[in-house]
Image 1 (tube, rainbow, N blue to C red):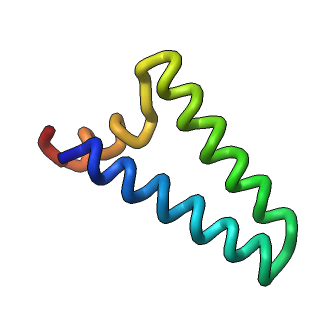
Image 2: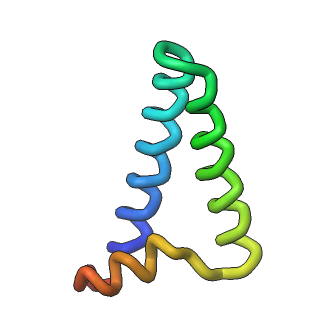
Length: 61
């Protein structure tokens, strides 16, 4: 369950930040890059901050 939530959050952040970058200000693309870098870091280290946050909020696997 956590993995699906994490993917939904990451995907939403990317789509929202791309839209904001196109329609509001180009600096929003920095947030897109941050989310992408976090996904890459998570795949290498097998540690994800969002997973820790969801665990503390009581979301089960």
